[in-house]
Length: 191
Image 1 (cartoon, rainbow, N blue to C red):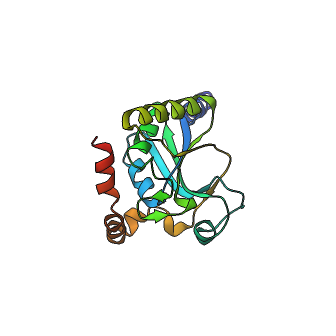
Image 2: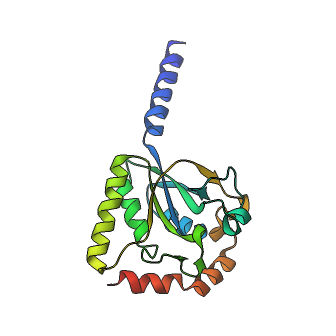
């Protein structure tokens, strides 16, 4: 019995210390299918969930967000292990996967819900975002129009949006190519 109790204590301590390293980050970069793909490839990212954030409507639907006046953006929730990857590294990945100079959306997806947004959960994240924006503006001599917002609440998108780029791979590739996302990213970030 004594060894069983010791085993349980060790198991609980290991679980608690492991879960304490899990963090969440939130970014909007146009189509959440593409943003989800770009983050899921990173070492230390455990899960990326497509959803909505930044608006006023509770439990919005895709149709409401893209055609309505919910105030929400297409957002991804990134669950990551901060022992393996930092928020700053996530932020770097965010920038190279969006057009931070497009005030009308991202790539072929235009409209408010497709605008780029870097959400912050604390002062340290906000400072990093602001620092990155100044660096980008100096490098490109252009105004970054990506919104910077305090994170409040996340609503998971409909199930058919989750892992869309994996499940509907061919359809996703056709969409991504037709949108010209990769070509525009190369033009922006090769400077």
